Length: 263
Image 1 (spheres, rainbow, N blue to C red):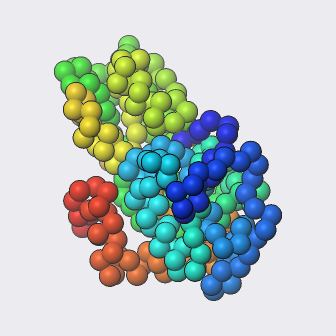
Image 2 (tube, rainbow, N blue to C red):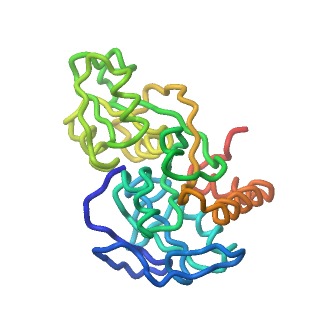
Image 3 (cartoon, one colour):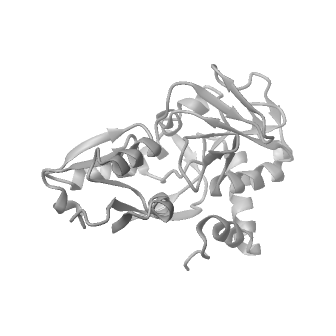
């Protein structure tokens, strides 16, 4: 989910600001002794666009992940601020160590490699890799892409899966999801691989295209925090447990995906 080098910041209000440096030297403390990089704000680093998890609409960032982080911010008595930043800085831990953000909710799969750099919350979403292509393309699985072009997104598990399993295909790497899907739509690539949630959302509007295959990768998303930030991780886990128990999670899920989560 790597993005352009300009760093964008969205506050919890509609106003949009663009800054050129890391966030906040004016740190503060929230409920439960959780230390924050900016007083009164829970700063969430993410990579846009990743609809329906996080994307910009009308000058604001909205989405499934954003709604969940809003609940964490409410628990802490602060407001969420969203920072659009290169994904590699998130998964490497560099953004947390530099004080750019407190949390990252970015449709991010929990992996052993990432656990070396950041700590994760409990899992909050199940995902798997999927393949999208134009209807009638003749592509229904990775072997059909021999001699053809497959789009992948940089620094993602789809990038890893495509490079490992799409033998015979020419792998074309894109900086973010939007660029990758535009390449599918314009015929620059014959197909693309990414998480199933974002691809199924895309084909709702792009009816000439379809998801033709899912791969059982058994992935789960987690919210990331700086290594050792147990207070914030515990707060996130508390909120996730409460919203799942109360049914609030199901309501948010259905709002963004149109169906209740499968058991």
